[in-house]
Length: 331
Ligand SMILES: [Fe+2]
Image 1 (cartoon, rainbow, N blue to C red):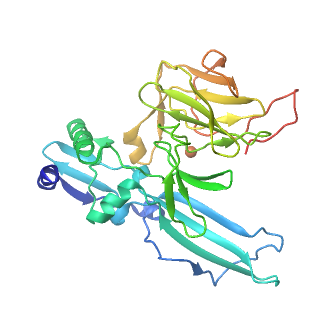
Image 2: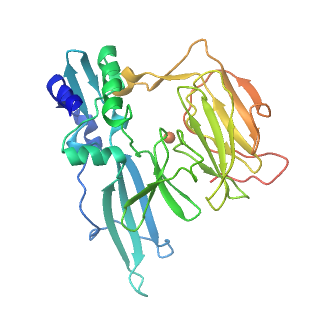
Image 3: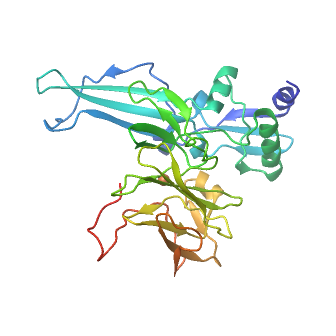
């Protein structure tokens, strides 16, 4: 309570305004339950599969991203820091007829930190990524002392399925399971307690085995850990520190029948440009770049590293093995 009083008396929260060109990123409210879509432009093909399409994205609580001002200076949330909101479109055929019933629902991912702020009915976490250095350091300390973590949990980046279960995830912490029927958030998936670190937002199902290849990259050692989850989702079959000697912004991973494709790129996020809508990332000019080809159950010693010209990328499009097996797209 004392720390809360310190924050309340020292920091002034303000809403960030959106530029007209950013209106498509404005947060929306939960609609409270599924609604039938009555107006459909075009036609849904007869052989379109029944099912649900779910999108995840950043949707700040309380109507806007926030900034704070205090004696320590200013700090602001950046656009990726909005809470995760799921948007679902359900496609179902009406009985035996050829007509479609389409409904829409949305729901916030019920993360631990969202529940804290909703219960208090106001933003509580101090922005701790962009701003004046002193303000950011104080935000880190106060967030940690008050809530046991320096940043919010925001599962706002992706939705993925493995072994019949569906999860939401951001790359900063473990996924949370969701129910696709009502968009309720379930428990955190730490693979039986075996994974307690960052978890990629882009895990890949390996062709052939159906195993899930995951990784976690971090700003502190171990910088990059790769894991292989069993096809039934119950066991972490493999977990290995690739013993990188730097923090690398490895955001995606590739899989083929036998290999994991690792990116070790000299990237730094330019937060200032990020928030101004310009170029997102910058090269470390003197940095090096490597592409690693790792046997599915390999380790730091068995990765074959290929030095390449420093380059910049977040996502892989495809990977395949040539000459030894059919071209299989990764899923
Ligand atoms: Fe991504």
